[in-house]
Length: 325
Image (spheres, rainbow, N blue to C red):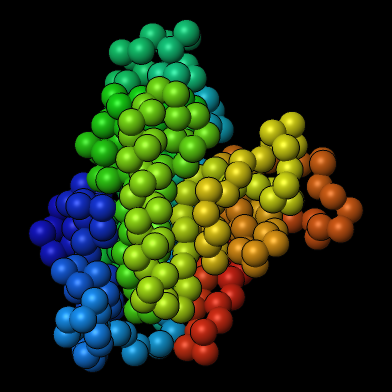
């Protein structure tokens, strides 16, 4: 791996995204916890302190995709799905303007012992997962070096009931399982949603992540970002924020402006009562189709592909799903 092109554990560390492109486009002052395009003076607790405020509202784009390899053949082979990823990477590299980052929203691989140990044994499951992780990383190394890569853990990466051990396996392979970073005036939060799905296997890690999230949201609210984007694997809800567990939903622990997720293996866009867009992106591998879509929802496009998000200089954003052959 080139030292000027950090990926994985070299990039996702210290609860942030450390990549030259991201550093160039947020100029973030960690000490003051603010983006630093221009410095002004502000009174804080009767003390003069430097408050750093970003004035950069230029447009930029990023890409979201999810659910990449292993599921189609139940881990008998994954070269077919790696080829799908190569197609996606080729399409991402060709985008103009070049995206500043690409976020893969979980289930990077399919093999995990909590699903397949009864059939293969835990050691064999871990061996296959290691092979899939290595092949995945080798494939995604071809993403243009100027595009930062964000790796989100899903339930097939750390299990439906994650433990300290399964999370450590992910962290060793890909870097921090949750983190946050500025891009221009946007604040981006990456979560380990499997800990929200079932925290019972790692309750202390769940509490640590929740406390960190509450702290990040409290801090960033003072900085007035143009957007807060939150990335995870599990959708907080599908059609309505008040759905019950019987309706295949989760609950949002805190309001955010936009949620980008995978897991559902199909496209879906909903909105909460507090105006958070819940955007679910279809898979890069196996796609599903739901027969329970409410009549007032548009029929989603359930094909393999990726989502391109454009943040505009006027404080808005839009997105579109691009199908891949």
